[in-house]
Image (cartoon, rainbow, N blue to C red; front, side):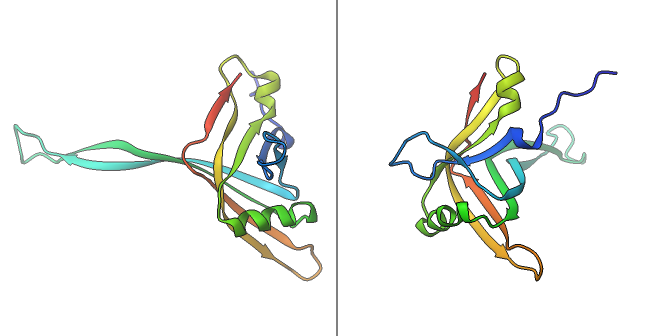
Amino acid sequence: MTAATSAKFEELILEVEFDPSGAAGTYTAICGLIDVTVNRTSNVDTSEIPDCDDESLPLSIERQVRSQEVTASGSGIWALQSNQKLMAWWRSATTLNARLRNAKAIADGASGDTTIESGPALLTQLNNSRTKGQKVAADIQIEWDGVPAATVK
């Protein structure tokens, strides 16, 4: 049996270009996130197609992708290192460049493997919660404005 080659926790990195006017192209990981989930969704339209030769037959179903979207959600500890950056991003209601970097694919992937997905994104949710005896927690939601561009090895 051949085991799957898999990535470690630290090899999938969610990063944001928090200061695009400064050192352009400088991405920073969001400190404190322990869980990150990436969703790539195809929004599909469905049409019911009749049989022209025998209308008594059930309609056939045809589907077509209407649009695609990519989102990332994260949760963890509310880190002071990311506090002002995230608050300013949410308050600005503007896009910042964000990327998903697959360090495992960069290091060990084959030619043509996707290593980075990047593009303008919105911070659509910024939530905090507290529980007595525990550190303040954070939950975020990032939504790309269009499908992020893929960089391949």
